[in-house]
Length: 386
Ligand SMILES: Cc1cc2nc3c(=O)[nH]c(=O)nc-3n(C[C@H](O)[C@H](O)[C@H](O)COP(=O)(O)OP(=O)(O)OC[C@H]3O[C@@H](n4cnc5c(N)ncnc54)[C@H](O)[C@@H]3O)c2cc1C
Image (cartoon, rainbow, N blue to C red; front, side):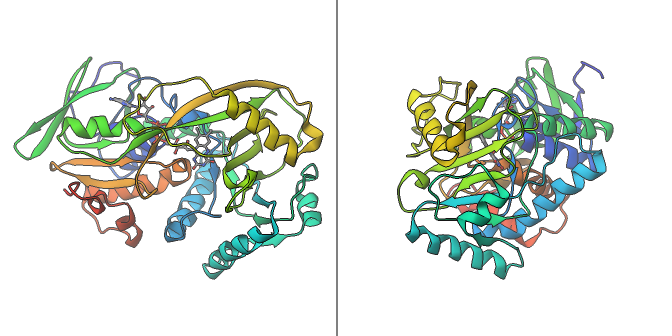
């Protein structure tokens, strides 16, 4: 593997998280000479710290076709690459703690079943058959059997390795410091290791993407939001599925809760009882995990799984997601000519990454768009059209 940057390429991708890696891999598969530049470590930002659930349940219904395609793609990747990222077809339970929220779950289930998906409503007894230690005061749960998880860090590494096998030149510790623009089109990127002449640039820099787009004079509406996770010490296998909260109007379940057990044995959980947005423009750096988050998370875990009251915590972490005003990615063309973006993950970007790789490749190669691609077109925001 050469340490020397190529002087030119068809496409440069800025950002080596799961999105940039998936985009680079797809472009190389589709025959373009592709350079992937990561400012720090591949998967070292939010991607490697994710819970990486791949699912269709209780997401934006407009995106269901995308999610079905993305989940199928992850399954195929796992099979074709020989399971290098601990693909676990675990299914997902969304617990319900208040009778009035059963109707909310039913609405989701009906809408997804109308798309041919198989979610169903389970009684507390049926939940315990699937998740025996989930003995807390739930009134029901929805069950989505198709959902899965992967090990996020291994997934980035596997896509990177496969991309390299197909011709991606990838460099870590190589931040892009400037974009070169001549007339109305991009012509290159600048880095501390030298410039690269390139006709097409894809910004896949997560919450840092707005800063990169600004180098081309474009304002994209992506702001950072802090996301955090707790991990226990290694446990014997005790949690089988992804346990999430059903959408609700209030109470402990109204925030974002996701609990699962990694193949390493660590119980991972991510709970925000009252989600607080990070102020737009807030500094995009690693902060301490708030103590309130630790306390609320442990309380939620032990409410749902009372037998885990004595579980020991090992560590916690904070990362930054990129948030857009309508909770959907920006994936498509930006001005000037030759500039593209795939960012604005809204905390669910792991699942969508392979789809975004295909979308960006279609645009870069000028082939027909898929109907769902329009959902992500940055031009839906005033002043961001290519
Ligand atoms: C606790 C937790 C749980 C989650 N659970 C899920 C889940 O269950 N399912 C799901 O789908 N998603 C989940 N997510 C969200 C998911 O991890 C993210 O949506 C996804 O990883 C975003 O990937 P990305 O490639 O866009 O961003 P990032 O991983 O942030 O990658 C962007 C990269 O760009 C690099 N970069 C920035 N500026 C430059 C520059 N100038 N030059 C070069 N490189 C640069 C950064 O160093 C970084 O590596 C979770 C996140 C967290 C924190």
